[in-house]
Amino acid sequence: MSSSASKEKTEAPLSPASPVLGSLADAFALYQSELLGTLYYLVGNLDDARDALQDAFIKCWRNQDKLHEVQNLKAWIFCVALNAGRDVRETAWRRRRQGLPEDEMQLTSREQPPDVILENDERMALLRDALRALRPEEQEIFLLRQNGNLTYEEIAKELNIPPGTVKTRMRLALNHLRQVLAEPT
Image (cartoon, rainbow, N blue to C red; front, side, top):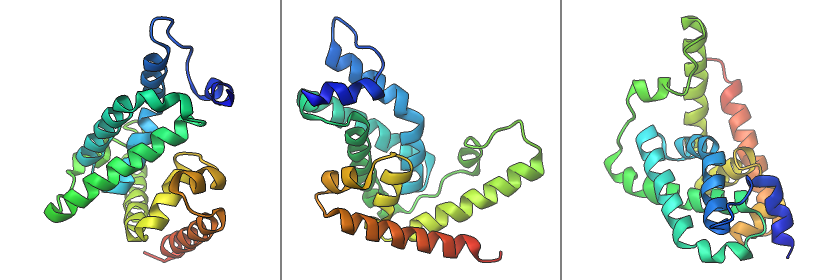
């Protein structure tokens, strides 16, 4: 099938004892930091992002029998992770928990001077707020495109919407983000 050809690009070599299980675990290990970053933007704090990542892995693990149908493993994992993130966000919405400042600092390199770290933190906070201000459907497409590196066609297929709708939502998201990030602080 063509799925094996597309998997060669995104997966580490398969384990002979358990090719499907090995490839899924390898893919998760490979994409873990990208997934965590994407989920962090989606849910708003590191603890909830980690919970969503764990939920996504469990959901993928439970559906591993469908891997032979998957054309793009990275796209599938990112879609499962975004769905898990939306679930976590909806439950977190009620409790409105804020992440600890230390959590946010973990995403910044400690080797930079303090003024650079502070400036980066401020830009990240501004970007995070701008992403949260997007409509959920725009946010989802933006994150799939930017962090998941999915094409517009792959996003359309995964979300079961026309490619034109994906492009329109992405354009609206980018326009909003440009406008917010261009405002003087």
